[in-house]
Image (cartoon, rainbow, N blue to C red; front, side):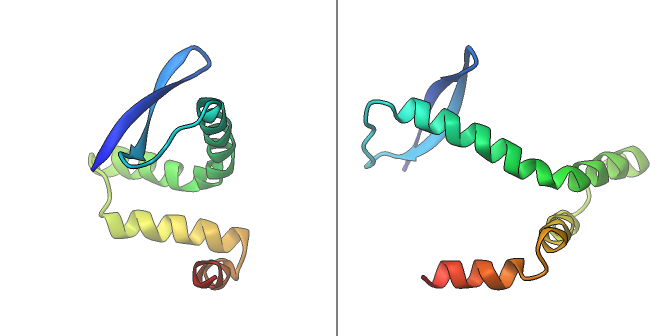
Amino acid sequence: MEETQFFRLKGKHCPYERSMGGHREDGDNHNIAFQLKKGIKVESEHKGTIKFLKRHMKEHGKLPKAKKIYKSIAKEHLKEDPHYYKKLEKFHED
């Protein structure tokens, strides 16, 4: 079961999910906020997908099928590193 917790980021309450069985230690809020900030910067690599979604919405009035969105994200990862999925597979094996 998941429980939504909140932390503050630049004066706003931001939710994050954590396992009910997990333990929070002092400073976790700062850690999570810091990791979120880093994650947002890293995930901004998906600007192409955002542009694709906006263009598709404008042209068709609805979101594309999920598979098209996944394809756009996969292309961005491969543009970043042609061996992205090979490395990811190895990472998950370890």
